[in-house]
Amino acid sequence: MLFVRPGRLADLDALQQMARTAQPVLHSLPHDRRALEARVALSEDSFRAEVDFPGEEFYLFVLEDSETGKLHGTSSIVAAAGYSEPFYVFRNDALIHASRELHVNRKIHALTMSHELTGKSRLAGFYIDPAMRGDAAAHLMSRARMMYIAANRKRFTSEVFSLLLGVTDDTGVSPFWEAVGRKFFGRNFADIEVQSGGRSSTFIAEVMPSYPIYVPLLPEAAQRVLGEPDEKALLAYDIHMEEGFETDRYVDIFDAGPVLTAQIERSACVKRNETRTVRETSAQQGATYLIASNKPGEFRCVLADLPAQTDGGAPLPAAARHALGAQDGDTVRCVPLHQQEPTHTTGEAQ
Image 1: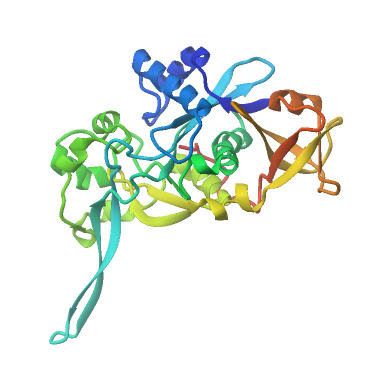
Image 2: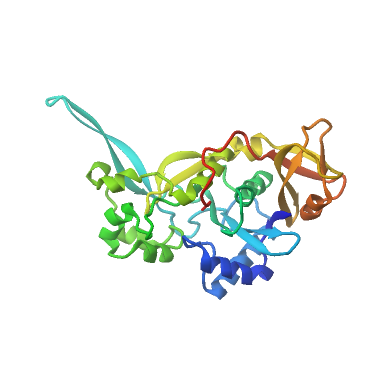
């Protein structure tokens, strides 16, 4: 059975392999082993820490097969994006240009560099083994983060956001980067992506334009991809929408990918949460649920079928109980996996 748990230093070899193979680059998983080790150590410290409000904490999760012990994915939460340096995006503003004399009244969109998301909690660092079949593993790996946030509210801000991969062609060229970023950096998109440090690098403010960029002045190819997810990110888009995320007026500063935001109070993992008591049983038919235990330092999350709630019980088979580290009588958080049929059924979450 697949389950999500906090990453630990013993996972370093597997995490380094993921960091090397992930495309696009995972800023939460440095290629350098020492830097990666420091990142994982920070995560271990963050999970153990007593936290009253979000700060520099970083939470790394892994997807493990309970039968083989092999890791098949990772994801993370940044408690406060841009904690040490501002976190940059473009804000898509609508400006009115009008003239009574000419009877002109036009709404013109303009992109302005913004760090308004600085300090807000961010979902980041998603990777799942391309060999994994079906969408269930991606849903589990991604939404387990929201299950953790829902159970540990004071560790995170009331609003959380996520950047999705913007449109690139088969060779990795971004139309938006070619129209904007390359003009200022004179470098390839992939090179800057590796160095950007997750959109919090000082050089972004030093090099990118501080004045608004009028969208109609951009090439049509760049305009078309504003706020659009890449084909590889369509599944990620659906997963976020199912959780209660919404598109916002922000786009990624490099590839113009969508920035999705959610109010924790309105997220599915809060609104649709059911606290149930574990009951020992064999596998039962029913709707598929995200099921999480949240013992101190021992967060676990699985997917399992549950019958409709009648007595507040969660009848779970042995494999699910073992993966959760739960015994008969323990309480778990349960959230239905699907509210409706997803719009897209293919693609990789980012």
